[in-house]
Image (cartoon, rainbow, N blue to C red; front, side, top):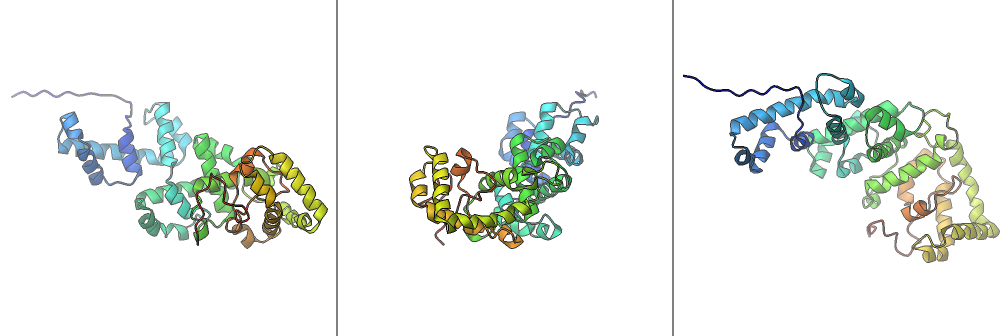
Length: 337
């Protein structure tokens, strides 16, 4: 009795994107097999359930072996065990460090410690994200934080250099690191309607204007720590509301800068005094750590103002939304309670 056996030998590691997604999402092999069966792959490939099970296990095994390299992405580029095309390497890294917005909103601003990690079971239940995926995302946040926390220079550049992430993803991680370092409160009920993108946008502007590195490029942790001297100087802003002439001058300068650039210009101009007073009240209390952590609870940053006219360091956040009639269109409606 004779039988024929076809054998193919190659040294290129093939990456199935759908399988990689299932593995990243935390599906067990049995769950992944069931999903693949439902997709109709057995009929498409003319295969059997046993072969599909074996194929799934083999691909998962490869991903597990690659994971240790993904913890330090430059190692993936220079290793010789897995022959993977550069474009596939970039895909593996980018998707491994991608995160779910629902998850990051639950941990944003919290200390990346064992205490927070103990809450991942509850976060998994709340968000519907598998516990395994929550752990991967949390460990990624913590890993990036640990690598860049003592580095000089741009947070984004350091993250890109050491983790090979795309520009946008590196910026998102810079925001996560910045919020974790300064422990900004983002979990209050009145802040739940704000997205991660809203906070990331704010973080980028604060890094560029409020940190040590915004003044002195030789400072350690330049884009991690807020400039205490700058926050102390904000107390002088009381003059803007205490002196009528200065208030009028301030209003004139701001209105001139924003003329024709702001959709809510008329509302801003009509309510300028109330807006200015609200800003000053927020700014003058940022010398205490608790008030810094509560910044977003007390003020919301209108993106439209910052984007069309980046404000100098001496002017604090341009928000609270309360005195405005309505709110900028980039924000969803604020909760009633």
